[in-house]
Image 1 (tube, helix red, strand yellow):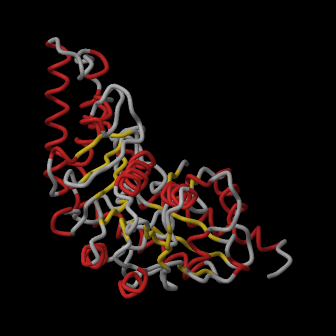
Image 2 (cartoon, rainbow, N blue to C red):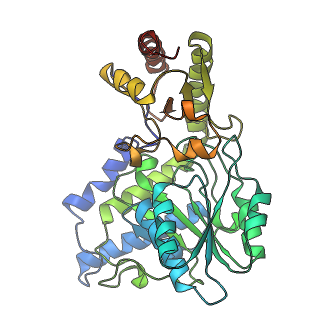
Length: 384
């Protein structure tokens, strides 16, 4: 049996989404920047996709900028907003200590360019206390960036409260909402979000396409220049099949949200209860209450997470030790380190992320495989 429990890294493309995309490869393949009929038909569908995405996230269609994915979106927003709005009196950005690597690296780039970068701490459950932002923010702050849902531990931040504090000091607010769909009902206006990032492959859409939602009242310096597409904010030929897929996937995610949340919650709770009952020396990383239901990040005492991952992979169970973007980097997770996890257990963790296509039969198989893996690895661990 093959069991895919790494849905936080990427999801399987839903066949219904693929069906919507196929005509744009085979028949309606015009370049949306061309002025002939085939191109203008593609442009019309592009604009409909913008309107659909905007409606689903409570924003304006002209604020929807299509990108190659969230990494590009985060780079565009963080660098673009900071560089375009820098003054003698405003030269500071704030990000959380558990942001995705693309946000972290963008902040480090800005620090090398002379910006002051501050990092918001998290508590032992991986949550940001709004009072911590109030301590760091001041009138010099241009932008605050906090991810809505953490990719490693699934914790949900109070985005609305953090955005409100940011605006009180005249700062803009950005959230990497990649892991939030469809768990949170995102509404950029209601939540006070100026900038937002999405990636289609996290909610059963295609890889290689994302959204940078931009408050068009704010200056943003483009990162990719060329033909001037997206009002000059992101040049390059429009990926129409991907864009259609993203819009359809987002619509489907929210249309089926209630049933989806119920399903993954049942699977997650069943899995966690069985693990606690049948495998000793385990603990949950992060809050169970303020967490998306598809994510469990579990510490297995006395054994290496990479060893568990590889043994499970041999048995056909596919999981992760944390961020997919750092899969080849075996250094300890800075997310878990920021939460104060004992250094002896920083490399003993596995992320299980459940999804649309998982079944209870798969969960039972995974539990059986995991029990054998843990027992075998602990049998020759020198510190048990």
